[in-house]
Image 1 (cartoon, one colour):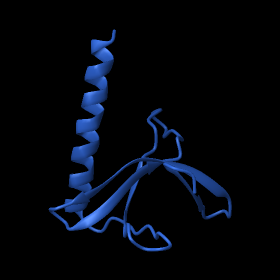
Image 2 (cartoon, helix red, strand yellow):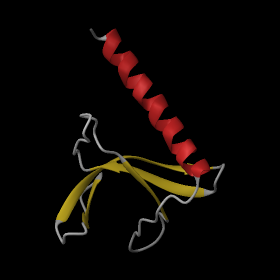
Image 3 (cartoon, helix red, strand yellow):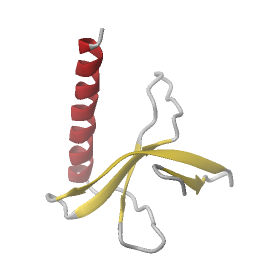
Image 4 (cartoon, helix red, strand yellow):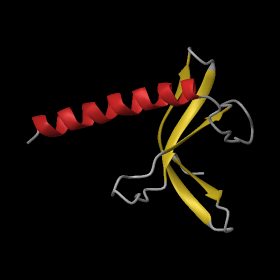
Length: 94
């Protein structure tokens, strides 16, 4: 695993390389999260972003699914905040 990259085998048996966008620990849920992308785009042209929980201190990291609406809300809030910051910086540099 390269720094900020990892690979998984998809349901067709192909290795897919993912870029880690960020990780964080939520005090609200007491879990660690990883947000990542394979840089593919959806039908609307948006970059596909995925999120999972993980245990950072395990020898072999396992990604687990997000289980609740509350968890998705926490992740979406962070993503929206980061997206606004990027947009603001882009506008300042224009």
